[in-house]
Image (cartoon, rainbow, N blue to C red; front, side, top):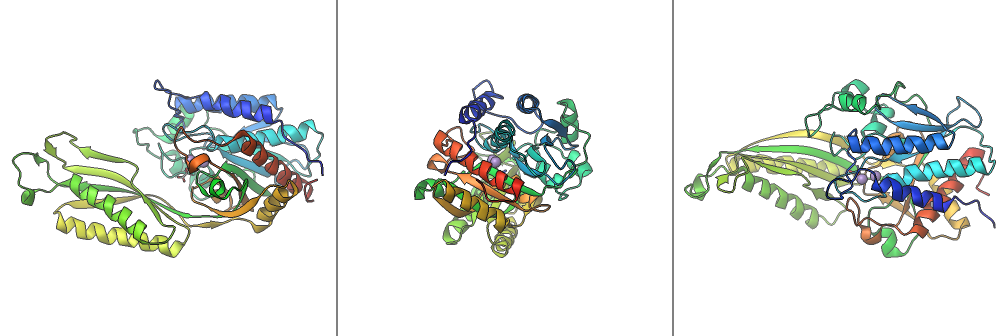
Length: 414
Ligand code: HGY
Ligand code: MN
Ligand code: MN
């Protein structure tokens, strides 16, 4: 059976080129949401959309859309999306692979004279990573009505900036109301960012659900005091208390025999001096579980431990919620299309749960959505060592092509 195929060279060249945009003095890839480096990435993506002859729209939260109004203008479009913002010292595939593959699919179909029954759109959502402005997946959350746009634009970043000001400063505070196009269907292609596909030698993941996410910021206040003269029994040591939380979370997750994961990714001490007992420790807690009840149990257990700790260590503890998303189930019909497309191409395919958060979990609030995964070498991501083989990148993009063809004609892929 002959299959359509994307222009693999064009896709791979663009992934590599975008992966070089936004590197800092140490060569690290850092394109935090609404930053100057992210603007460079946005500008490059918009230039590619223009080259492809697409209509371009930007909404008030800075989401960028390339629209192929081939038919059924104004009808619900088929949307392909992901993100081009990154974490700190990122790999080059997370998010960018899905956005550039969406553009590639549209350009391929246009060049092959394909006549879709409805518009096809590629989207780059703002602030998927949530590193500078919490919560993560913010642009797609606002787009799908999960967060009020005015509230989102007022979000204060970890650097004291305000998201709305930064979007205006980089020229991406667009005119369109978030949600101005309701997708007929949404498909996101993404690297797995985990070890499963590679370990099982499977080329394609048909992602049928995504785990719940809980982000909190914890502040522990004790007393600064002299590191040499203060007896252990007299200390109100915020640093030591924070360390007890970190080990509590790891020990609990490890002992749980469930998929529960817990991460303390950011931590800061005050006054942060070698010979001063920390008066304050501020850190983040990222809890995840595919089961909502278990995720709630983890949050309750943490709260109880913090209560115990505050009396044990004579410190005061406050908690701020940064993000909370329940587990999401994706659209079974689209998942079946992904499996059929892999089968038709003779590729092994496995149904999966996503451990990472993605824009698809937000767009699933407004349209049938699902995801396609391709293997990550060593399961590594959010790390410059992030890697997916070209053959897997191309295979995933061709699966996306087939799924979009099927959705755009209502029929199975050719
Ligand atoms: O946090 C996540 O899972 C995603 O990378 N934003
Ligand atoms: Mn991502
Ligand atoms: Mn990510």
